[in-house]
Length: 477
Image 1 (cartoon, helix red, strand yellow):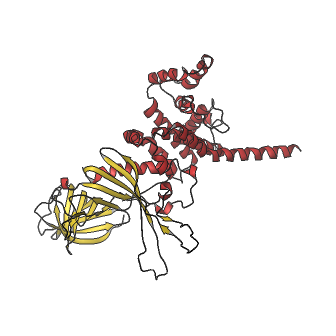
Image 2: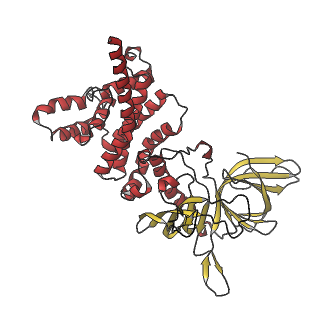
Image 3: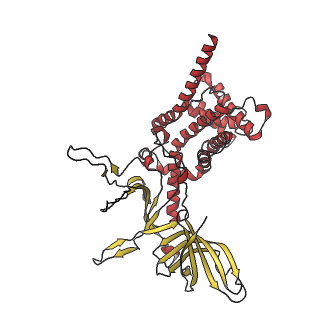
């Protein structure tokens, strides 16, 4: 990451009395924050540990008098210039502009706003609207200032979605007038919290939106507030002063953005629909689900991966999900099987048991885990294209084993080409079914959305099959 010189000034480590001269380098687009502390030295090299390797915060005052605080600083370079100076380089996670602090415990805030570019369609609200024509005047666009939309709230904090906007002002004699909307997450805590606490909540929410949109997202502008940081004007009224934060959590991914208009089924869920889910449940299980989500996200984001890698990622995500959230050990799985088939007519139970426990003698096999997920406790019937339901777990397991271990015995049975692509989308559809369950959506919504999302694949396969039948009929004539 390239950084450029932004300011020079005097710096205090952990607000100690000792002052150091140093240069601050920034990359505003990617969140790069680097400080080089320079200590004059005409004698022998100073100790490597002259300054700590990790510093909670560094207060700074630039040459023009501006205050700066760097938070979560880690040593990245150490250089001894004989007869000249010692240079200690630090990378910071946060830079707070216009303020200094006495202690690390003082760097706490009551509110954070952080923007996530590219999620306006997911939010499905706009501050700019088409006006109703009243027959008297032509107005191109009107402003409808939306209030923050609450996503979640409890006794600890609240989380909202807010869409800010720009106004061109009064000077309109110019060739280009820009109106811009910026989506923000607003996190307000009932008690003062450190920056990392806010970031953990923001990352948790960003991950959820990434799943919903099937797109990588990044953070941009961050603003924090605290009742301890305020303006006091002539009327003696204290007004909170917003602090802009440069941060290392920025991700410059806008180049790969997809700008086409989204259809409803292309979102796993929207902001409005998320409000009907159980967000508190997601907070409780998000750490357990993280390996599953990483596999799901990795497959969606890395478009250049081969289809076999996409397929393997989705199979592993389902296998990991089943072992983490449904059943891990063989003994527990056998108990689960008996519970599942107990609702079935007696005549079907042996066949159901064989389908679920197939080859699971010493451990729960991939086939058994896939079979369990496919059955969905007999509450939903998944589309599996040309593959019969009873054959689906074995076909997927054989294909995974072929691509993973390259077993030549499985080559003829392994899916390839369009069949492998179709299998990937089917597996993704199954995983999304369970993701929606984990997010706490109601069963009716889950079933409808999963049917909507698999419909384009089913329609495409039906068209190809109809075309093949037509060609076969023409061949007989």
